[in-house]
Image (cartoon, rainbow over all chains, first blue to last red; front, top):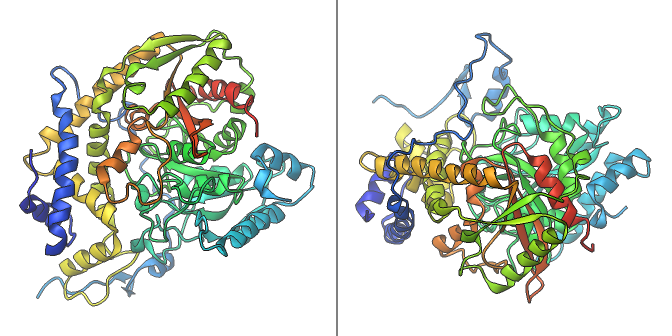
Length: 95
Length: 475
């Protein structure tokens, strides 16, 4: 499948990454090449093969429903770009 | 003391005999880094020096801890409480870790003391340590060449005498390939052998932490200090950790070693082939049975890897949004702009390329053709290896089809860079352990490495066979 500049614009929006118009052509070109390489996987006949989701194929791991240690709010505050009254602060979401 | 020629085994002996203290050894490594940093072509293998951390940990050193206070270099994607961790990315600039991850905690309990952070490709995405926000790292064997990647800082520091041993992480070859490029040893353990807790995730179904060391014996010692079950990583496996060092003495005689045709094809350069064939002759002389093999799905491995790894990366890196930690772009008008600006300014080009590719292969309309198909090919690859390991104990291959490349030679050509990993990605996709061991040099004196791949959780068998070769080599 060929990848177009429009595809790149679309996935960039989904991934919240800005691609400048100046970069778009070279990025789309690189990605088209990579996708061509990746496309080779479709030459293998995989009928009858179950997808391998995890190499260990263990069943789901459950833990006891008890709370463990958590980071103190003071540490979270130190790591936060902007923090007030116990909350991370971001620009307004609602007009 | 001079850290340059010191193996981890020798350092432990010296520490136990009190010839030097852990603090002195850490400071000697720091001095080697500071001296080198004055050169215009500095290795730039280490991007953070923290001898005070090693010294404070040394105060709490447990009597009888097997690593005896040896300073260990840690790749810049592992959380160590109180130290910065940035994945060599601008987006984590200034971030200081509030906790220590599982493997590093175990390392510290066993007397291995983090004293510095190693340079790497940004978010471990690269094969040459050229995408780091902190500048490129160089190969100590010849500084015009890359040290490989993504754990290129870890490998260059150990080979360059700035660290005695290091931890790296390996998602598609990122421990083994730089170790080979720098002429030292690197081991990717079985998926689940070492805790991934506190390792900043790239491809969660592929990532493993492992040792980068001067010798196979050192790799055995360091693996023993980090391996084991961790309830904080639900993919770590609750299986006993053998004494890897004791296992080294097992003779390779009678072992069956597979030689897969796909790894000795036309594309392998003669100098690499000749070096690896000397290893084949060695094992034959040791009484091993060399078994020709075919792993037919191999030709689809690199494509499969770049689907799985980028898909997982696009999901894992969604957490870096400038809201709760890391770098936030100033002046955004609304939340959407804050996400866009923080991510666009914080990630480098290669990371963006992989996030976009991962988003593409997971997006509506392409999921079945890429992600689902890759999962099925991954099954075919595993079936190949299951069939092989019914017949052989180990599989032997080159690490790379070509010798080490120069700085800048591939950085503008992503496909060429991706193909550097063609022989290493399979062990990650299948989850099996694999080691890289030096086996010669090319015409320019750059190291060449071979790879031994073993059955899941047979690190002991992989290490023993590798040690048989390694201990015969001049140093």
